[in-house]
Image 1 (cartoon, rainbow, N blue to C red):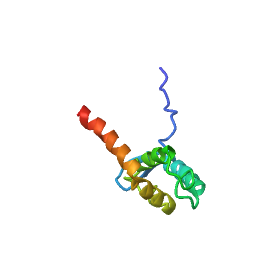
Image 2 (image 1 turned 120 degrees about the vertical axis):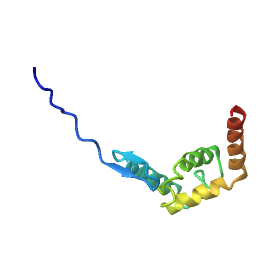
Image 3 (image 1 turned 60 degrees about the vertical axis):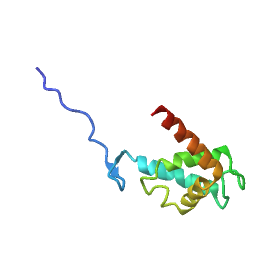
Image 4 (image 1 turned 90 degrees about the horizontal axis):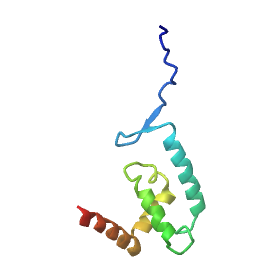
Length: 107
């Protein structure tokens, strides 16, 4: 019988965030690149659509908050200020409370 050679590639390099969660295959670099583009697009505007807080800001802030256990967003000053500004909005607080309320009812 032939002995089968293991031809699988080496495991990819992993990056570790501040809380020790491993990210694989350049995922951190990919996210940083996308967030850099977002930051440039935001520019000096307070919100994605200029001076108006919209559903787009609500959704984007929700996504950016997912990364709060890392320094990926907070290391980009413009995005950190954007998240802070959006999460301080009464509309964001109402939406978050409504979402959490659904989970509380289900618990």
